[in-house]
Image (cartoon, rainbow, N blue to C red; front, side):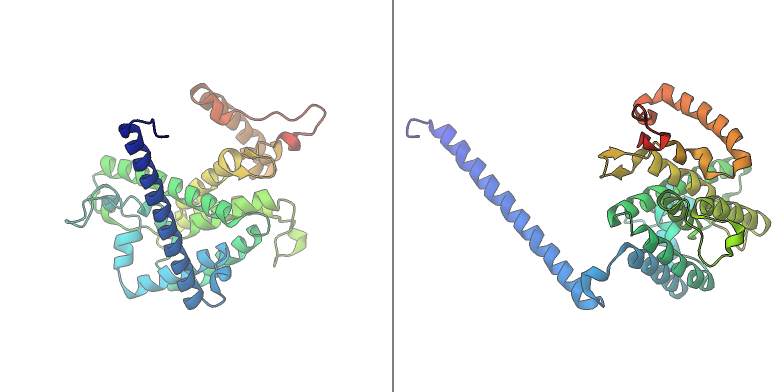
Length: 313
């Protein structure tokens, strides 16, 4: 209005200019994104629609493992080297390589293992894509890998401090065992009663048995032949953190809630029946202790009156 003071009018002009500038930045950002997607369409067979979670994860494992055969720089940049996680190995880049606690899960040191693992990663992820969105799969995988790698890193620090074996501080560790276990935990949630393919039905093995079987096999082989499976410590930690993500953090849009709090997905349910009472006892004790510190995080939603425990979600 004409009676508005010049200062207020100037403020309105500045606000309008700022809004115009921000909208211009948004338009520039959208243009850059469209250019990137256009480049993806040009260089990727099938275009951007072919970039499913299964293709991305499988391609990542195969590509990084092959590149690692060509140059050792992949280990220096992406493998879990405790020294690099604490101190940057590059003088002009003083930031520690904190990302290696997660990236170490996405490639193998042995090309033969990569040839065997990459199709398994694609197959497991493709099954998850039927029920989970790509965003949910990537969130599950990244959270599980990062937490699993961080626990291994912390354990390695304690080991080096106790034993004074400084060489262990520089040994690279990488492997996809944690990634396989994380995906198997997702399948345990999505298809618990579906039989495992390519196995005799008489064994009675279902997807609900897959995470424990993979973890137990990795721990057994890694304990007996550490050189054959150096990434075996990723398996038990991925077993736990994969369950933790689905149990408390994963977003379920159909119910607009975080986590599957049903009795059928308790931590004890991931173990064989003979172990479930013992694991359930320790799990209840751990739940009570954590509830003292973070009650809102571990508080379970109650099933509706008259409903089954499975309705707790």
